[in-house]
Amino acid sequence: MAFAILAGCAASASVIPGVAPEGSEARGDVGEPERVMRFPLAVEGARGLSGLGFDENGAFWTVSEGDWGLIRLGDHRPPEIFQVNPAQEGLDLEGVASLGGGRFALATESRDERRSDRVVFVRVQQGEARVEGEISLDYGEVGVSASSNRGLEGICSVGQSLVAVGEPVVEREGERLAPVFVWRDGGSAVRSYLLRLTTATGKISGVWCEPASGQSLRVFAIERHYEVMRIVEFQVEPGAPVGTVLDASLRVELQGEIEGDPNPEGLVRARGRFWIMTDNWYGEISGPSELIAVETAASR
Image (cartoon, rainbow, N blue to C red; front, top):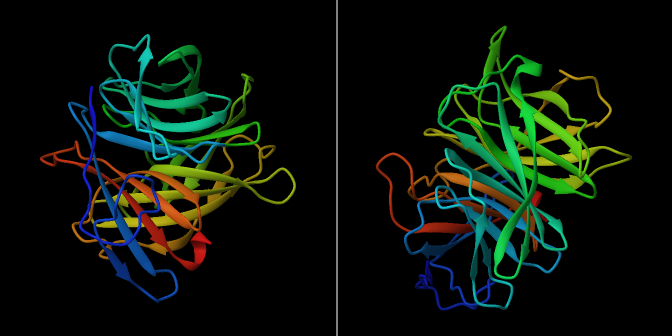
């Protein structure tokens, strides 16, 4: 599978080595983008890019949904694709989190009606991403079930903690709630929570984790649907009771701010920007995916 970078038309220097931004937009309002830069990407033969991770060496990582490819982008080395072996029939890759030392956690979904989805752990070595284990996350613990192609959309890590958020939504008393899972790397004890969504139709499609005070975790998430695109923030207390409902607050409104309203599927906050990976393989949409950099007061 060959990797191709589509250079943009802007003359300014790229913030990703080897990739030039297609253009930028200036913004100044609080809660809205101050500047947007778009980096078109293409992976020949890959069926969509999804998820976004960032490792200790400053490289971005994404996954090819149907091809089980783990892809490294822009760390002063040529982009590389590592085939995930063994691939698992019937599952699509949706999210990626760097665990350090060449290890990654990959979020998945399937086309079946089901009660749980899997996170697959891989290690990159000798030109491939070798599967080392997996963990099953049970939606049923918080009263959620998953339908076809609605699974674990976002995954992130900070320290030894991992957070995964599902796309399925349950409605209770007029509120829309999404499943959140938290566990320790290498552990099997998973705590399940519910995230109160901020819109009438949006679903979570990507997350990024940072440490907060004490043992708390700060999580940024993309909430999106056809008429929804925003970055929200919530906090997780890893010791909170199972089923605790977490509140999200709006950080950046993106709907109508990025031309074409792309489909955001991954999120990183690094280098003073939010970075968003878009999906080029859904509905009638096809063509190159994009890595979009968004500068706001909340991204610094």
